[in-house]
Image 1: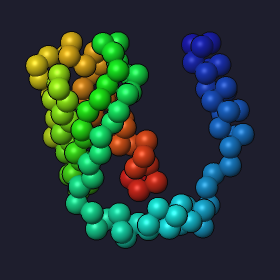
Image 2: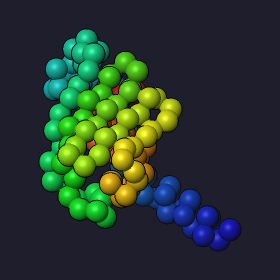
Image 3: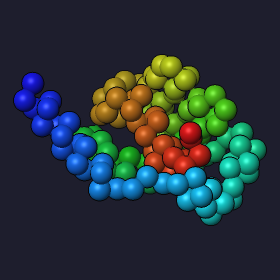
Amino acid sequence: MKKLILTTILTIIFMAQFPLLSNAQLEETYEAHGGLNTFKEFNVVEYDMKDLPFSPVGILNDHQLIDLNSRRILITSDTYKIGFDGSEAWITPNMEALGIPPRFYSSTPFYFFGLPFLF
């Protein structure tokens, strides 16, 4: 219980150090990246991830395809294939091919670069 209280207090102190974005700042962020309406017009986004040191099995290199409307994801590489249907993730041939949970890996990179547009 003491750890929970201490963690809560430290989190509050940490978060108080950073001001929240105003609506104007958020709009500026959207416009700097082409605008929210432009983003919403895209159906899919795809990109190649190169040299990611996320996995205990080694450096990851793969191709990621994300449906922006359904958030379905397909990730392919030479050694694994990951899918996410919006609620469940799967991987072939097996978990050892990636070394980390497929649900975590399937969504994390997209959220890092797509964050301003996700809410």
